[in-house]
Image 1: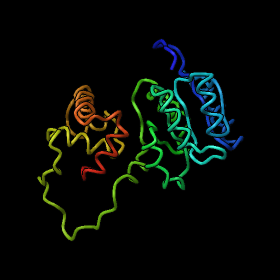
Image 2: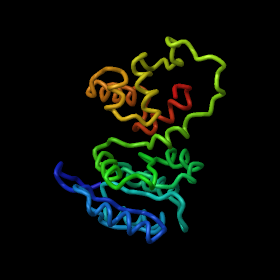
Image 3: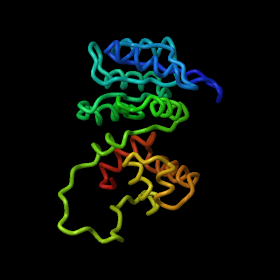
Image 4: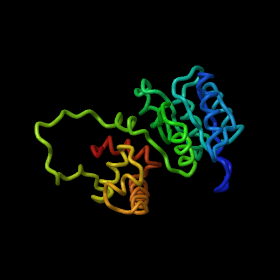
Length: 224
């Protein structure tokens, strides 16, 4: 990924097999402050080639595409260009591919009904290393549980995670719901800088790359 000054526009590659959707997203993003669409691609193979040629700051990737789908393209881009953030952008009926995309290395997973301003905000955040997992998508990572006959005690302990403190487990549980740093801070009555510090510690102690991997870890270890 090319070096970028703090005030420079975020250079985005839009990948979608539907021309109307692809061009529409590109046009809407071009109207957003701080966003520059440097290229488009109609399938995963084109996306890999465009990343190599254009070196965008962020890739906005569809999931279901011909020739090479978004999951395979994400895996290849992640292997060859590990520092390039990849945000998956798809519709509700792609939920079966959510986990595959995240495991392939996607940094975030957004839905196509996201307002343009929110999409632009997610892209700008991704360029700064902060990734967004749509709350609807985050819910898909949490296994369905049978409704208990009575609510659990308010002070019920969190599931065991020996590597983390109690507060870090609380933060991790909220990360798995798709909550932002501000929302976590408000929920736990702590500062946003403290939340960032906790998340940094969580990622370091568990050997995770980003919030998306943290959400998957929380699901797999019963913390979600």
